[in-house]
Image 1 (tube, rainbow, N blue to C red):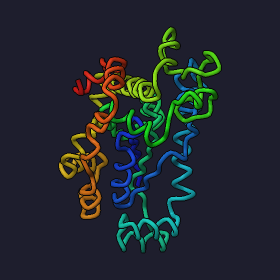
Image 2: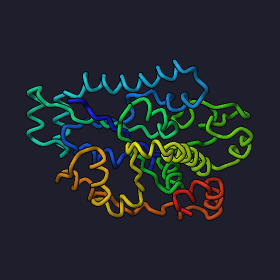
Image 3: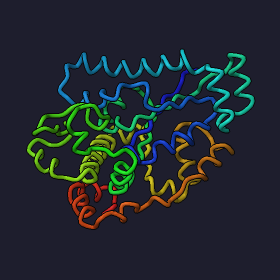
Image 4: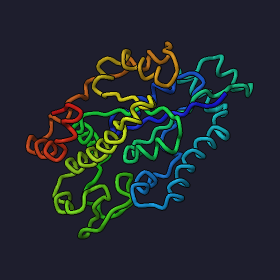
Length: 292
């Protein structure tokens, strides 16, 4: 049986981690986050590259997924861990120990691939993509509170997931994803506003590529609004599960029920002037997704 590939995309703090926790309960599936792909790759592929180099990087992602399936998908230790978490049934656990378990689908999550949706689409031909998006003002708030991203100190080097590539401005660097001529404006922003700047660049790239007629016609991409998912998780969860050619089960339902809408609008606790600044920076993108 040929393994079906899937990818979960979305700006960091858009609900991708929650989704992967849910999808872990898909039977005869492997769900992996992050570790297969060097974090610099989604950034590098946005630079002008010779076609053979670009194609080599695409092959690298496909090979990494295949290698995981060969080397780690049959881990008995991992199977016990999944069973203890309620993500694997007894029959599937037994199949793993007997070395007869057949993986039906492989789902990979790397939020920074949102910078390169076309790379993802091309690197894994026929893969199903789940694109989840969230109010950028809430994403930025969560990024700053959780990871303390894009501070002046972190702009002093090119060693973060948000910015492994950039150009020097003063004693700091400006990320590659900031438009030429906008360096001074970006540097003058607070980390919160810089974070929504990153969000707008990610969602703009995803929107522009995923709404191309040929991509939409392929049926390979499912758009999910974070606020809808956490408000009505069983309804939207069913669509997500079906997108990956599976059916709902009790484990999936129980995990979906853990969704909480409490973080919707969390950015409203910030200073109103900073919110206004962020909303101005990302106004077109916030309007595309009907947050303004």
